[in-house]
Length: 215
Ligand code: CDP
Ligand code: CDP
Image 1 (tube, protein in one colour):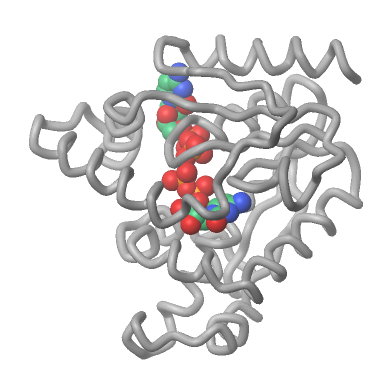
Image 2 (tube, rainbow, N blue to C red; image 1 turned 180 degrees about the vertical axis):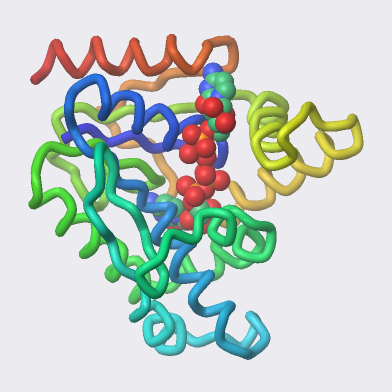
C-alpha cells in the first residue's frame, strides 16, 4: 500500500497511476469519489448552499467503483463520467461536499474496499493520515502554486494558458486548498517531494524507487 497525498494539481493522480503501473498495483483516487458524489448531487435539483449531508449521500447511491486494468474507476450510473468529474461546476462545489463527515466516511469505506482487493496506490489528501495510517510508503507531493496552475490549466484547456487564465486558475487552486486545509495535512512519516522542477517521469521514478526499498 502506497499513499500519495498533497494539494490540488500537485500531480497525485497521474503519479499514482504511473507508480501503480510500474509496480503492477492498481490505483484508486479518493478525489474522484468526492467529485463523483458532488456530480451525482449536482444532477439532482437544488442550490448547493442548501445541500444536506443526507441529500448528498442519497444522490451518491448511483456512484460505484469498478476495478479495471491498473485502476479503480469511479462510475455514475454505471458509466465513466470523467469530463463531468473534472469540470468547473464539480470543482466549485467539491470542497463543500468533502467537508461533510458522512461523505468522508462513505469515501473512506469505498477506498478500504478497493484496498481489500489487492496491492494498491491510493491518492488524495488524507490517505496517509486518516484512511491508511499503516501504509508502507507515504508521499506528500507539493509544487509551487504557479506551476500547479500552469499544469491544471494546460490539462483543462489542452494548450498553454494565457496570463489571465493562469492567474485565475492559481487563485482558484489557492481558494480550494484553503477550503480543504482541515483534511489536507502531511502524515508525520510522509516523504515530501517537491515536483515543481521535476518531470512526471522523474517524480514517478523517485516514488517507485522508494517503494521498492520498502516493499
Ligand atoms: O485533482 P485535485 O487535486 O484538483 O482534486 P481531487 O484530488 O480530485 O480532489 C477534489 C476534492 O476532493 C478536493 O478539493 C477535496 O475537497 C476533496 N478531497 C478530500 O477532501 N480528501 C481526499 N482524500 C481527496 C479529495
Ligand atoms: O491529482 P492531482 O490533482 O494532484 O494532479 P494530476 O491531475 O495528477 O496532475 C496535474 C497535471 O500535472 C497532469 O496533467 C500531469 O501530467 C501534470 N504534471 C505533473 O503531474 N508533474 C509534472 N512534473 C509535470 C506535469
